[in-house]
Image (tube, rainbow, N blue to C red; front, top):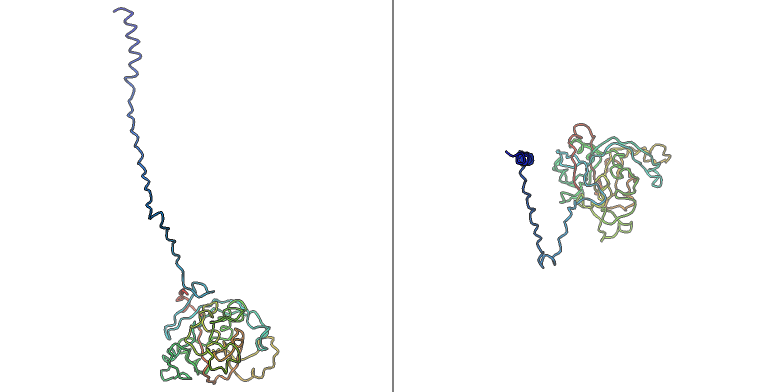
Length: 308
């Protein structure tokens, strides 16, 4: 073979052989992106405005927390508010002489009835009892009850009468307010007389009403009717506060203290600090009561939140 052709053959082999031995990598086909179809809104959709989202509103008592702790007393079917132990200001330096001096007082945790004891509840204890004056309103507070009768009922229900200190804390809260709802008078907050003149007014709207009729007047702990409706017995003897120099002769008479005022009294007598001493055997148509109980292990484990 001619050397010239041998050179050409060798050159061709050098150029072709590496290409033929190279690994052929298949190329992947690219996927076509999906077509985005934009739908034109119709005339009706353009005119129609989107409806705003409805907010869920919880029905609560104005000025109260949405959730409050409560305990249900099975014996008489009463809900009880739970008050944590702590200090609060008791008394009023600008009030009556027996309300002075104001002082910080510690109160252990306790429960207190959210509502005054009703006629229906009292009949569970004594089905022969008739409220004084007679009333067919089962949900109205029982009236004409002496201190001893109130104490017996509370004991039967596994409870007790609240002390004067406990009552005032439940009505006042941790702030030294004048009334359970605040420091100014408020309409539709209590069954109470507007002034002394309305005591003789036959058209006076105040009167005995079912418990819980005035949610605007509830205390910060969600306790109702701490002002007006009926006076409420406390367990406490009528004694002077510490450092009180008042020479009230009633301090010596073993009187018990009533709190809260009633539908027959003016708003001033329904202040959270107002004290009304009375003989424990007194029966009046504007006196009732509510109960309390200690916050021990048997009750605190049953505390549940309540919506208001």
